[in-house]
Length: 353
Length: 248
Image 1 (cartoon, each protein chain N blue to C red):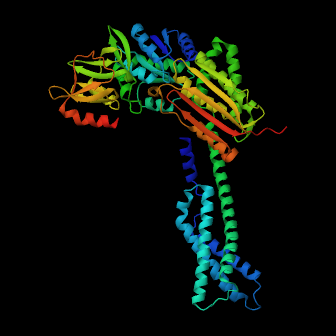
Image 2: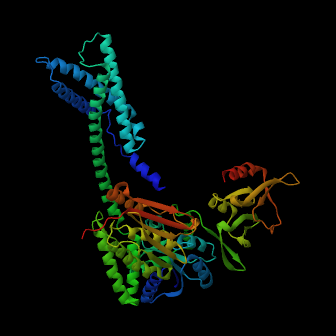
Image 3: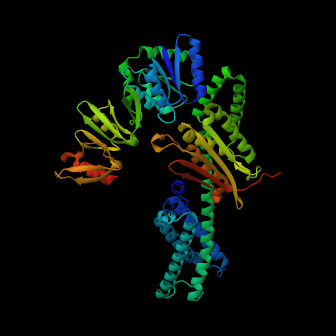
């Protein structure tokens, strides 16, 4: 399930530009002409013959560029299916092949036309020079496109994560139930009501912080513990949470508001719908240089499960992890008939003293 | 009025009891922590009004309310909910009361006044509101006057005879008030009609076989043949039954 969602996410963002667009074609022609000028200048043509040489060179280079553009225009959707890095490699290879073809064609044409253009080179030399120069130019272009697509993607991701951070704010269901609990305790147990108000305030404050920030595991676990205390008032013995987190380095960093929303999910979709409640198990472990945190909860039989389980918290955490770690982190979901678990795996970064 | 409070959270029940105590007009005659308990208590205590939490484990508030409909004198239901957008939307359009948590005293008093006026017929609308889950997870039977909730997943078949419908399930047989037609409409996903008077759980069907008279009979899984009448598929329903069996 997780993997499927990630691919759709990527597909929705094209990383190669649209080569069929007029603007793109114009820029490519412009760049090709500049390359032609540079090459002609570098070749030091005999005096007075600069324009003639440039004309030949430009014709050669612009043809290659335009054919390359046409090729990518047609094949873009197909190429992008292979995933980002592969797509750039494939595009690079295809363009090189095309250049080789054009070079060979030019050589043959030139020979048939009894050498209208003066090429001071052997057949093999001509092909080699063409391939060498075009691979450098194409590589530079690809690198540029790659970086600009990364840059666009990070802007989109950041915008998404900002939106989802707003959505991540504490569930209204939780807020109103907690207020109801506090209203009830205000009479029966004022001391506990007071504590609950303080806890709720701390939790709200953590929620209002910048969700882009990373906090130490110690802080994040504290927020989760506060949350657990509030829910405990409401659910009583039905809620049990076991924290196996001693293995985790408490100074390591984690995007804020990740464990608490997952604990909230575990309670809302799991414990609350079980008449006798159950135990949420939070397990932290180290795997190589990574840290892993798993939140596991029992769930009620399917007949009793509501379909209103929105995946908001989860997709939001996914986005923030991607923004913070790229592909160095993973968010995985495991679901069986009576258990549900989410595993976060992310690189161990420690706070600088 | 006599009130039954139903909520799975103890502080929420306390809160309602406190406020009802403040009004001084009404009496809390019982508290239940889930839908099943609520139905059993309501049967015994006969409350005028039930304050019913919507989100509860097991039988939730909405299903509980629907089972109240099978009572001879169903209590008026006032739902309580913290924040359940979808449920609130379903109620906005009709007369059934609901109050939001945290509960305000004035709001509760208003809802109770409303509930007192509420006619019995209006209660029936709970079962037909669009947007509410159409399927119950249980049917409600009475055995020697005692309420018995049977999980749909435990049911082998429903058989209609004259006036009543018999449910045959893992723990025996019971009579229920629902009509076969309404059961068929509600549980069409799990049950298939095999003749005019019977619905069979598709996933309980082990085999279809011709009997001595050339009729097509159904054999059920884990059937200890406590049932004397055989399940014969009528000609009209053969194609349908076969199609459902293939689909599963």
